[in-house]
Image (cartoon, rainbow, N blue to C red; front, top):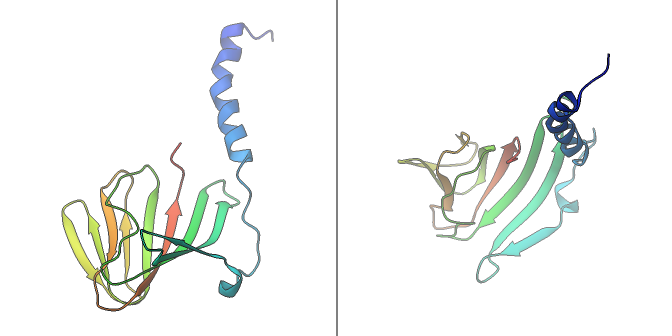
Length: 142
C-alpha cells in the first residue's frame, strides 16, 4: 500500500492526540499521605488553602486530578465558571455551598456534588467555620 499525502494528513490529528496523552504522567499504585502534600495558600489574604493530591492518567487513558481545598467562612476559590472537564466534590468538614447552573445546595460532611461538562458551577464556604472538600476532576479541557 502506498499512502498518499492526503492519507497521511488524516493521521496527523490522531498522532497529535496520542502525543498529548503521552505527556501526562500515569498515576502510580501507591499510598498518598496527606501530611506529605504541600499546602498552597491563595486568595487576597492567603486564607484559602489547597493541597494537590494526585494528577495523571489512569490505565484506561482517562485523565484524573484530585485536590483538597480549605476555605475560611464566606470564602470561595474563584467565581462560578465553566470548563470541559467534569468535577465532583466531596465535603470533608464544615458546610459548603455548591452552585450548579441555577440551583444552590448546602452540603455537610460526606455529601457530594457533581458538575457536568460545561455546566456553570461554583463552590463557597456556606458556614461560620472553615470548610474542607476534595475535588475530583475527570477528563481534560483539550
